[in-house]
Length: 355
Image (cartoon, rainbow, N blue to C red; front, side):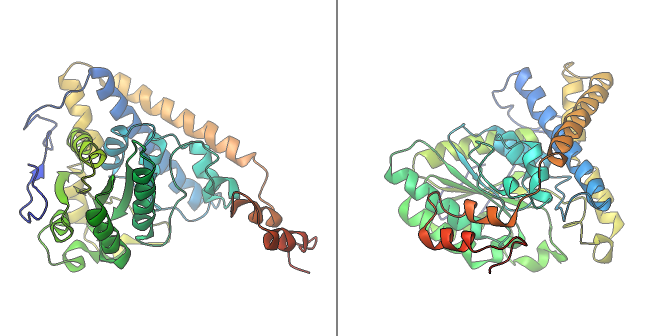
């Protein structure tokens, strides 16, 4: 399945089919890890669904749902080492939770609290990046620094299919290839960049084959198959640690809107959505585990209840956190505050504006 640098023919990696049946080599993973992968997907989906409701109630701000992409995010992040770094876009709640970011922190971010956009969670996850594609350059910078300092870490940039049309994406791949950096570019091809379909985003057969232009390896994986994503990411990380950057294209689907400000019914057909719902990542993994006699409907129901309880507790903690004050903005720019920012901060009046 894996090609080599400069190869444009890309095959898709798959372990489980849509019915949850094995179709290729089973990765080396214990039943406890299978359960861990599924439970993280349940937690991510539960958080996502609650966040959508809370936004509709006006209790949090604009939110970008990731429902349908749980396997891509959880499977990829589950393969990371603690020292590895995630450089997310605005839709990586699943991957970020797995790598150590708290749900409370995410809620604070959606509420506009400054604490939600900092590294206070003590996880190797950069703040959410709103500028499309910019996180790829940051990941390359982090990977370059890690190489120069002889650190055994890999930087992972998460980006959507639409973001691959940005110059930042291509510049980052070029740097990674030239300097042989420990970085993985993880593209979640969810078929839509807001209202622009994948077919109008690029004329190439796959996004993964774009890696060939930069002398790095590209691989495409079934993004709704958490086992395929997990095993693919393990290999990608192994190569990246050896100075061989990788572009992974996870083919998945955004089941919900682009953000809570979007109405997907304006640009896509219900028949398309229904077809992809049959490929739902949670349904596929659940069927596989039931077949292995390590899961059942009663356990499944209880797991969703536990996930809901976790989300409720996290949101309550976030709601009880004091709102940010204007003068605190200056505290999150530099590690050591320079003189001019100290002066600006001291110039703020009681209403939070410069005197």
